[in-house]
Length: 399
Ligand code: PGA
Ligand code: ZN
Image (cartoon, rainbow, N blue to C red; front, side, top):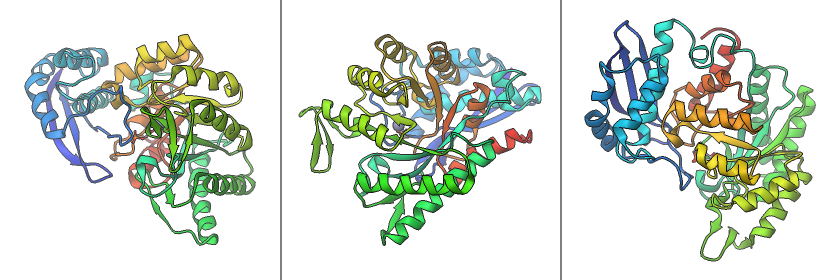
Protein backbone atom coordinates (compact mmCIF):
# COMPACT_ATOMS: atom_id res chain seq x y z
CA UNK A 1 0.00 0.00 0.00
CA UNK A 2 1.22 3.50 -0.87
CA UNK A 3 1.87 5.37 2.39
CA UNK A 4 3.27 8.62 1.06
CA UNK A 5 3.77 10.55 -2.18
CA UNK A 6 6.17 13.47 -2.09
CA UNK A 7 6.41 16.01 -4.90
CA UNK A 8 9.04 18.66 -5.52
CA UNK A 9 10.45 20.95 -8.20
CA UNK A 10 13.85 19.97 -9.56
CA UNK A 11 15.96 21.19 -12.48
CA UNK A 12 15.74 19.71 -15.93
CA UNK A 13 18.56 19.72 -18.50
CA UNK A 14 17.48 23.09 -19.92
CA UNK A 15 17.55 24.61 -16.44
CA UNK A 16 13.77 24.73 -16.24
CA UNK A 17 11.81 23.44 -13.26
CA UNK A 18 10.17 20.02 -13.56
CA UNK A 19 8.28 17.69 -11.20
CA UNK A 20 9.96 14.90 -9.25
CA UNK A 21 7.87 12.35 -7.31
CA UNK A 22 8.79 9.96 -4.50
CA UNK A 23 6.46 7.06 -3.77
CA UNK A 24 6.78 5.18 -0.44
CA UNK A 25 5.00 1.97 0.51
CA UNK A 26 3.97 0.17 3.69
CA UNK A 27 6.48 -2.62 3.15
CA UNK A 28 9.36 -0.16 2.76
CA UNK A 29 9.32 0.19 -1.01
CA UNK A 30 10.68 3.40 -2.50
CA UNK A 31 10.52 4.83 -6.02
CA UNK A 32 11.61 8.19 -7.42
CA UNK A 33 11.01 9.56 -10.92
CA UNK A 34 10.90 12.90 -12.73
CA UNK A 35 8.89 14.25 -15.66
CA UNK A 36 10.70 15.28 -18.85
CA UNK A 37 9.54 18.23 -20.96
CA UNK A 38 9.29 18.90 -24.70
CA UNK A 39 10.09 22.02 -26.72
CA UNK A 40 8.55 20.96 -30.04
CA UNK A 41 5.46 19.61 -28.31
CA UNK A 42 2.55 18.20 -30.29
CA UNK A 43 -0.76 20.00 -30.39
CA UNK A 44 -2.57 16.90 -29.07
CA UNK A 45 -0.30 16.05 -26.13
CA UNK A 46 -1.52 15.79 -22.54
CA UNK A 47 -1.10 19.10 -20.72
CA UNK A 48 2.04 20.04 -18.86
CA UNK A 49 1.24 22.65 -16.17
CA UNK A 50 3.77 24.96 -14.55
CA UNK A 51 5.37 22.64 -11.96
CA UNK A 52 4.26 24.61 -8.87
CA UNK A 53 0.68 24.69 -10.13
CA UNK A 54 0.75 21.01 -11.05
CA UNK A 55 2.19 20.03 -7.67
CA UNK A 56 -0.42 22.06 -5.74
CA UNK A 57 -3.31 20.62 -7.75
CA UNK A 58 -1.96 17.08 -7.46
CA UNK A 59 -1.53 17.36 -3.69
CA UNK A 60 -5.09 18.50 -3.34
CA UNK A 61 -6.83 16.22 -5.83
CA UNK A 62 -4.73 13.11 -6.38
CA UNK A 63 -2.86 12.35 -3.17
CA UNK A 64 -6.05 11.52 -1.18
CA UNK A 65 -6.87 8.92 -3.87
CA UNK A 66 -3.37 7.42 -3.73
CA UNK A 67 -2.17 7.44 -0.12
CA UNK A 68 -3.60 4.49 1.81
CA UNK A 69 -5.71 3.63 -1.26
CA UNK A 70 -3.59 2.00 -3.99
CA UNK A 71 -0.79 -0.54 -4.31
CA UNK A 72 2.41 0.65 -5.97
CA UNK A 73 2.84 -2.76 -7.59
CA UNK A 74 -0.57 -2.51 -9.26
CA UNK A 75 0.19 -0.08 -12.05
CA UNK A 76 -3.34 0.04 -13.46
CA UNK A 77 -4.74 0.85 -10.00
CA UNK A 78 -2.25 3.72 -9.56
CA UNK A 79 -2.83 5.09 -13.05
CA UNK A 80 -6.63 4.78 -12.84
CA UNK A 81 -6.51 6.74 -9.57
CA UNK A 82 -4.48 9.46 -11.30
CA UNK A 83 -6.99 9.61 -14.17
CA UNK A 84 -9.97 9.69 -11.78
CA UNK A 85 -8.37 12.43 -9.68
CA UNK A 86 -7.82 14.56 -12.78
CA UNK A 87 -11.14 13.86 -14.45
CA UNK A 88 -10.15 15.17 -17.91
CA UNK A 89 -8.89 13.38 -21.02
CA UNK A 90 -5.62 15.31 -21.15
CA UNK A 91 -4.60 15.79 -17.49
CA UNK A 92 -5.33 19.51 -17.69
CA UNK A 93 -6.36 19.65 -14.00
CA UNK A 94 -3.36 18.10 -12.24
CA UNK A 95 -0.86 18.23 -15.13
CA UNK A 96 0.62 15.30 -17.04
CA UNK A 97 3.98 16.24 -15.54
CA UNK A 98 2.96 15.30 -11.98
CA UNK A 99 0.90 12.36 -13.26
CA UNK A 100 3.75 10.78 -15.20
CA UNK A 101 6.27 11.38 -12.39
CA UNK A 102 3.97 9.59 -9.91
CA UNK A 103 3.14 6.81 -12.38
CA UNK A 104 6.83 6.06 -12.99
CA UNK A 105 7.80 6.47 -9.33
CA UNK A 106 5.05 4.00 -8.34
CA UNK A 107 6.42 1.47 -10.84
CA UNK A 108 9.87 1.82 -9.30
CA UNK A 109 8.43 1.42 -5.78
CA UNK A 110 6.57 -1.68 -6.96
CA UNK A 111 9.79 -3.12 -8.36
CA UNK A 112 11.60 -2.24 -5.14
CA UNK A 113 9.06 -4.15 -3.04
CA UNK A 114 9.60 -7.21 -5.25
CA UNK A 115 13.36 -6.77 -5.25
CA UNK A 116 13.23 -6.97 -9.05
CA UNK A 117 14.76 -4.66 -11.64
CA UNK A 118 12.22 -2.23 -13.08
CA UNK A 119 12.28 -3.78 -16.57
CA UNK A 120 11.31 -7.17 -15.10
CA UNK A 121 8.56 -5.73 -12.96
CA UNK A 122 7.14 -3.95 -16.02
CA UNK A 123 7.74 -6.68 -18.55
CA UNK A 124 7.56 -9.96 -16.67
CA UNK A 125 10.11 -12.64 -15.89
CA UNK A 126 10.97 -13.40 -19.51
CA UNK A 127 12.02 -9.86 -20.40
CA UNK A 128 15.62 -8.71 -20.66
CA UNK A 129 16.93 -10.56 -23.68
CA UNK A 130 15.97 -8.14 -26.46
CA UNK A 131 17.67 -4.78 -26.67
CA UNK A 132 16.53 -1.76 -28.62
CA UNK A 133 18.65 -0.10 -31.28
CA UNK A 134 19.50 3.37 -29.94
CA UNK A 135 18.82 6.29 -32.30
CA UNK A 136 21.48 8.92 -31.53
CA UNK A 137 20.91 12.60 -32.27
CA UNK A 138 24.18 13.84 -33.82
CA UNK A 139 23.20 17.04 -35.70
CA UNK A 140 20.13 19.17 -35.18
CA UNK A 141 18.30 22.43 -35.03
CA UNK A 142 14.62 23.29 -35.34
CA UNK A 143 13.15 24.15 -31.96
CA UNK A 144 16.16 22.59 -30.20
CA UNK A 145 18.80 25.11 -31.32
CA UNK A 146 18.79 28.63 -32.77
CA UNK A 147 20.31 29.37 -36.21
CA UNK A 148 20.97 25.74 -37.08
CA UNK A 149 19.29 23.20 -39.42
CA UNK A 150 15.57 23.34 -40.26
CA UNK A 151 15.20 19.58 -39.83
CA UNK A 152 15.15 19.04 -36.07
CA UNK A 153 17.27 15.86 -35.73
CA UNK A 154 19.78 13.94 -37.85
CA UNK A 155 20.07 10.53 -36.20
CA UNK A 156 22.64 7.75 -36.20
CA UNK A 157 21.12 4.24 -36.21
CA UNK A 158 23.61 1.40 -35.59
CA UNK A 159 21.23 -1.28 -36.87
CA UNK A 160 23.97 -3.89 -37.29
CA UNK A 161 25.55 -3.54 -33.86
CA UNK A 162 26.01 -6.92 -32.18
CA UNK A 163 25.25 -5.57 -28.69
CA UNK A 164 23.70 -2.59 -26.96
CA UNK A 165 27.11 -1.60 -25.67
CA UNK A 166 28.60 -1.48 -29.18
CA UNK A 167 25.54 0.36 -30.48
CA UNK A 168 25.78 3.06 -27.80
CA UNK A 169 29.50 3.58 -28.47
CA UNK A 170 28.88 3.66 -32.23
CA UNK A 171 26.53 6.63 -31.84
CA UNK A 172 29.04 8.44 -29.64
CA UNK A 173 31.69 7.79 -32.32
CA UNK A 174 29.45 9.24 -35.05
CA UNK A 175 28.85 12.30 -32.84
CA UNK A 176 32.64 12.70 -32.42
CA UNK A 177 33.27 12.15 -36.14
CA UNK A 178 30.75 14.88 -37.00
CA UNK A 179 32.77 17.28 -34.82
CA UNK A 180 35.94 16.43 -36.78
CA UNK A 181 34.25 16.95 -40.14
CA UNK A 182 32.80 20.29 -38.97
CA UNK A 183 36.28 21.29 -37.84
CA UNK A 184 37.79 20.28 -41.22
CA UNK A 185 35.21 22.50 -42.92
CA UNK A 186 35.90 25.37 -40.50
CA UNK A 187 32.32 25.33 -39.26
CA UNK A 188 31.79 26.29 -35.63
CA UNK A 189 28.99 24.52 -33.82
CA UNK A 190 27.20 24.87 -30.53
CA UNK A 191 25.14 21.98 -29.12
CA UNK A 192 21.36 21.82 -29.13
CA UNK A 193 19.10 20.83 -26.26
CA UNK A 194 19.70 17.11 -26.81
CA UNK A 195 23.48 17.37 -27.17
CA UNK A 196 23.52 17.18 -30.98
CA UNK A 197 25.85 19.52 -32.89
CA UNK A 198 23.92 22.57 -34.04
CA UNK A 199 25.92 24.12 -36.90
CA UNK A 200 24.66 27.05 -38.99
CA UNK A 201 24.59 24.99 -42.20
CA UNK A 202 21.73 24.36 -44.57
CA UNK A 203 20.04 20.99 -44.40
CA UNK A 204 21.75 19.67 -47.55
CA UNK A 205 25.21 20.22 -46.04
CA UNK A 206 24.06 18.57 -42.80
CA UNK A 207 23.05 15.50 -44.84
CA UNK A 208 26.52 15.37 -46.44
CA UNK A 209 28.26 15.65 -43.06
CA UNK A 210 26.12 13.04 -41.34
CA UNK A 211 26.38 10.67 -44.31
CA UNK A 212 30.17 10.92 -44.25
CA UNK A 213 30.38 10.49 -40.45
CA UNK A 214 28.10 7.45 -40.50
CA UNK A 215 30.10 5.81 -43.36
CA UNK A 216 33.43 6.48 -41.65
CA UNK A 217 32.33 4.95 -38.35
CA UNK A 218 30.64 2.07 -40.16
CA UNK A 219 33.96 1.27 -41.92
CA UNK A 220 35.81 1.62 -38.65
CA UNK A 221 33.55 -0.62 -36.57
CA UNK A 222 32.59 -3.13 -39.25
CA UNK A 223 28.83 -3.24 -38.73
CA UNK A 224 25.94 -1.49 -40.44
CA UNK A 225 25.08 2.04 -39.36
CA UNK A 226 22.37 4.02 -41.12
CA UNK A 227 21.03 7.55 -40.83
CA UNK A 228 17.58 8.71 -39.75
CA UNK A 229 15.65 11.94 -39.24
CA UNK A 230 13.17 13.66 -37.02
CA UNK A 231 11.82 16.32 -39.38
CA UNK A 232 9.42 17.64 -36.70
CA UNK A 233 7.48 19.00 -39.68
CA UNK A 234 4.63 20.46 -37.61
CA UNK A 235 7.13 23.15 -36.60
CA UNK A 236 7.88 23.92 -40.28
CA UNK A 237 4.27 23.86 -41.44
CA UNK A 238 2.53 27.18 -42.03
CA UNK A 239 -1.18 26.47 -41.72
CA UNK A 240 -2.33 29.79 -43.20
CA UNK A 241 -0.40 29.34 -46.44
CA UNK A 242 -0.48 25.52 -46.39
CA UNK A 243 3.27 25.23 -47.00
CA UNK A 244 6.34 23.90 -45.22
CA UNK A 245 8.86 26.71 -44.63
CA UNK A 246 12.60 26.04 -44.65
CA UNK A 247 13.78 29.62 -44.13
CA UNK A 248 13.15 31.37 -47.45
CA UNK A 249 12.37 28.13 -49.23
CA UNK A 250 8.85 26.70 -49.11
CA UNK A 251 7.37 23.36 -50.14
CA UNK A 252 3.76 22.41 -50.77
CA UNK A 253 2.55 19.15 -49.21
CA UNK A 254 3.16 17.29 -52.48
CA UNK A 255 6.65 18.76 -52.72
CA UNK A 256 7.31 17.83 -49.09
CA UNK A 257 6.31 14.22 -49.78
CA UNK A 258 8.58 14.11 -52.87
CA UNK A 259 11.42 15.72 -50.92
CA UNK A 260 11.26 13.17 -48.09
CA UNK A 261 10.86 10.22 -50.45
CA UNK A 262 13.95 11.39 -52.39
CA UNK A 263 15.93 11.77 -49.14
CA UNK A 264 15.02 8.22 -48.11
CA UNK A 265 16.53 6.91 -51.35
CA UNK A 266 19.49 9.27 -51.63
CA UNK A 267 20.70 8.72 -48.06
CA UNK A 268 19.31 5.23 -47.49
CA UNK A 269 17.45 6.49 -44.43
CA UNK A 270 16.24 3.79 -42.06
CA UNK A 271 13.97 6.08 -40.05
CA UNK A 272 11.93 9.25 -40.69
CA UNK A 273 9.90 10.78 -37.87
CA UNK A 274 7.17 13.39 -38.36
CA UNK A 275 7.84 14.08 -42.06
CA UNK A 276 4.49 15.91 -42.32
CA UNK A 277 2.23 18.07 -40.17
CA UNK A 278 0.54 16.51 -37.12
CA UNK A 279 -2.91 16.84 -38.72
CA UNK A 280 -1.99 15.33 -42.07
CA UNK A 281 -2.92 11.63 -41.85
CA UNK A 282 -3.39 11.59 -45.65
CA UNK A 283 0.12 12.87 -46.33
CA UNK A 284 1.56 10.34 -43.88
CA UNK A 285 -0.40 7.58 -45.63
CA UNK A 286 0.83 8.62 -49.07
CA UNK A 287 4.47 8.75 -47.98
CA UNK A 288 4.14 5.42 -46.15
CA UNK A 289 2.71 3.92 -49.31
CA UNK A 290 5.69 5.19 -51.29
CA UNK A 291 8.63 4.35 -49.02
CA UNK A 292 7.23 2.40 -46.06
CA UNK A 293 8.62 -0.84 -47.49
CA UNK A 294 12.19 0.40 -47.00
CA UNK A 295 12.09 2.82 -44.09
CA UNK A 296 10.25 3.44 -40.85
CA UNK A 297 7.81 6.33 -41.01
CA UNK A 298 7.26 7.25 -37.38
CA UNK A 299 4.49 9.35 -35.86
CA UNK A 300 5.44 11.49 -32.87
CA UNK A 301 3.36 14.69 -32.89
CA UNK A 302 0.94 12.77 -35.14
CA UNK A 303 0.13 10.07 -32.55
CA UNK A 304 1.26 11.63 -29.22
CA UNK A 305 1.31 8.13 -27.63
CA UNK A 306 -2.50 8.18 -27.82
CA UNK A 307 -4.34 4.93 -28.73
CA UNK A 308 -7.19 6.77 -30.45
CA UNK A 309 -4.88 8.75 -32.71
CA UNK A 310 -2.82 5.60 -33.37
CA UNK A 311 -6.00 3.70 -34.28
CA UNK A 312 -6.85 6.42 -36.82
CA UNK A 313 -3.36 6.04 -38.27
CA UNK A 314 -3.73 2.25 -38.47
CA UNK A 315 -7.10 2.61 -40.20
CA UNK A 316 -5.67 5.05 -42.76
CA UNK A 317 -2.28 3.39 -43.29
CA UNK A 318 -0.47 6.42 -41.90
CA UNK A 319 3.09 5.60 -40.75
CA UNK A 320 4.42 2.18 -39.73
CA UNK A 321 5.90 3.10 -36.38
CA UNK A 322 5.07 5.18 -33.32
CA UNK A 323 7.14 7.28 -30.96
CA UNK A 324 6.34 6.52 -27.31
CA UNK A 325 6.76 9.33 -24.79
CA UNK A 326 5.03 8.54 -21.48
CA UNK A 327 4.65 12.24 -20.63
CA UNK A 328 2.71 12.88 -23.86
CA UNK A 329 -0.14 10.78 -22.47
CA UNK A 330 0.41 10.97 -18.69
CA UNK A 331 0.77 7.41 -17.37
CA UNK A 332 2.78 4.24 -17.96
CA UNK A 333 -0.45 2.26 -18.43
CA UNK A 334 -1.48 4.52 -21.32
CA UNK A 335 1.99 4.21 -22.86
CA UNK A 336 1.78 0.40 -22.54
CA UNK A 337 -1.62 0.39 -24.25
CA UNK A 338 -0.19 2.38 -27.18
CA UNK A 339 2.76 -0.03 -27.50
CA UNK A 340 0.40 -3.01 -27.35
CA UNK A 341 -1.89 -1.64 -30.07
CA UNK A 342 1.14 -0.76 -32.21
CA UNK A 343 2.61 -4.26 -31.85
CA UNK A 344 -0.71 -5.92 -32.74
CA UNK A 345 -0.73 -3.99 -36.02
CA UNK A 346 2.92 -4.41 -36.95
CA UNK A 347 3.92 -0.86 -36.02
CA UNK A 348 7.39 -0.60 -34.45
CA UNK A 349 7.56 1.25 -31.13
CA UNK A 350 10.33 3.77 -30.55
CA UNK A 351 10.63 4.67 -26.86
CA UNK A 352 11.74 8.29 -26.55
CA UNK A 353 13.24 10.96 -24.33
CA UNK A 354 12.21 14.63 -24.52
CA UNK A 355 14.44 17.58 -25.30
CA UNK A 356 14.16 18.62 -21.63
CA UNK A 357 15.31 15.65 -19.54
CA UNK A 358 16.56 14.62 -16.11
CA UNK A 359 18.76 11.76 -14.87
CA UNK A 360 15.64 9.55 -14.75
CA UNK A 361 16.19 6.17 -16.48
CA UNK A 362 12.63 4.82 -16.64
CA UNK A 363 12.49 4.83 -20.46
CA UNK A 364 15.51 2.49 -20.69
CA UNK A 365 13.57 -0.05 -18.60
CA UNK A 366 10.37 0.56 -20.55
CA UNK A 367 12.16 -0.19 -23.82
CA UNK A 368 13.55 -3.50 -22.52
CA UNK A 369 10.27 -4.42 -20.78
CA UNK A 370 8.29 -4.06 -24.02
CA UNK A 371 11.01 -5.43 -26.33
CA UNK A 372 10.81 -2.18 -28.31
CA UNK A 373 12.95 -2.33 -31.46
CA UNK A 374 14.25 1.24 -30.98
CA UNK A 375 14.96 3.80 -28.29
CA UNK A 376 15.65 7.47 -29.04
CA UNK A 377 17.56 9.04 -26.20
CA UNK A 378 20.42 11.08 -27.64
CA UNK A 379 24.07 10.19 -28.08
CA UNK A 380 26.00 12.16 -25.45
CA UNK A 381 25.35 14.44 -22.45
CA UNK A 382 24.57 13.40 -18.86
CA UNK A 383 20.78 13.30 -19.02
CA UNK A 384 21.07 11.25 -22.27
CA UNK A 385 23.87 8.95 -21.11
CA UNK A 386 21.87 8.24 -17.94
CA UNK A 387 19.51 6.15 -20.12
CA UNK A 388 22.19 4.73 -22.44
CA UNK A 389 24.38 3.64 -19.54
CA UNK A 390 21.34 2.09 -17.83
CA UNK A 391 20.76 -0.02 -20.97
CA UNK A 392 24.37 -1.22 -20.74
CA UNK A 393 23.82 -2.09 -17.07
CA UNK A 394 20.58 -3.96 -17.83
CA UNK A 395 22.42 -6.01 -20.48
CA UNK A 396 25.09 -6.72 -17.87
CA UNK A 397 22.39 -7.74 -15.36
CA UNK A 398 23.73 -5.05 -13.04
CA UNK A 399 20.69 -2.95 -12.12
P1 PGA B 1 10.65 17.52 -27.90
O1 PGA B 1 11.48 16.92 -29.13
O2 PGA B 1 10.94 16.72 -26.70
O3 PGA B 1 11.17 18.95 -27.84
O4 PGA B 1 9.19 17.46 -28.30
C1 PGA B 1 11.67 15.57 -29.32
C2 PGA B 1 10.97 15.08 -30.54
O5 PGA B 1 10.34 15.86 -31.29
O6 PGA B 1 11.04 13.89 -30.80
ZN1 ZN C 1 9.79 14.11 -32.72
